[in-house]
Image (cartoon, rainbow, N blue to C red; front, side):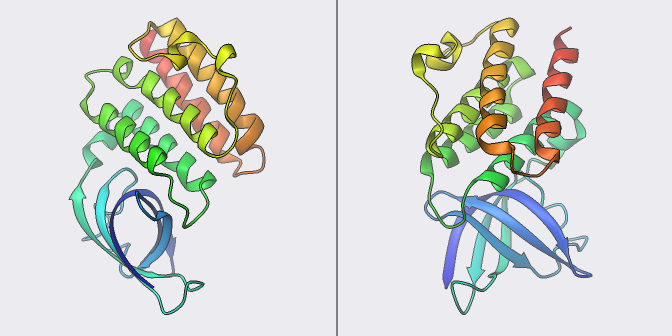
Length: 208
């Protein structure tokens, strides 16, 4: 197996003394895991961060084997992790995809939505510019994984484009949050719901 593709890094886990197991999302091949030799080195640590975009090269002798992965940086979002609120948003949206998407199945709409919400976090002058896109990303992920919500019962802000005030944004986040916990997070890692709760709490403090 040999694949070469642009990818959004989702999660990085230390493996052994120097390596790292990386999960990354590609547009055409879906979520792909790989082992990065020297992934904990000083050179690669800044590259291997969630939300960064890399050019990945996956190689394995068989489909069942964990592929060896090499990465070339394309776009870094490392600076955003110095800000608590953007950092919490990036950690959440990448961890959600890493934990819920099956490996090797393409979800081009999720890839585009994730790339879009990360770009919004990067470009927006405040959380007002990305909080609603984040909720819409969650809604799309639910639908793509077979847990679509009844459109007639959705808040208007989730059904239509445009902006919204903070009460409407928090209502949208409650709707998607409840659906995520009910359908996707109940059997997942215990830290995922708490990560989202921390994000919403920080949003609420930021606009109080």
